[in-house]
Image (tube, rainbow, N blue to C red):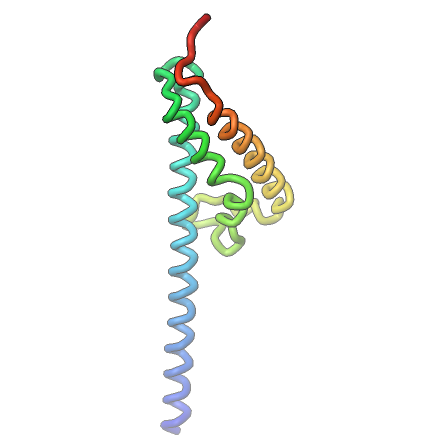
Length: 131
């Protein structure tokens, strides 16, 4: 009887450790994804500010923002949205999963556009003039 109780306690303990590790891993993925989204949003805002004249053009800041977006799109973006991390408590919508092929296609397309932007940013002039 004691052996059965001990095995049961050990089994429950192991299961709790496995569940805690899975939860911790899920939380880490969500936190990394949220940080990545915030970095991309800040980069896009910086670029938009330069294009619409709300910020002075800064070649180095433009290049850094373009590179930030490039580095976080495509396969990297896809990897940040595993099925087990969608829905609450994350802000990632659970309907990403049923539309996974479309989501991945869009992530790759954004990655292609971001790579082109980052490449063009490398050749951008140090100053932009109105003439």
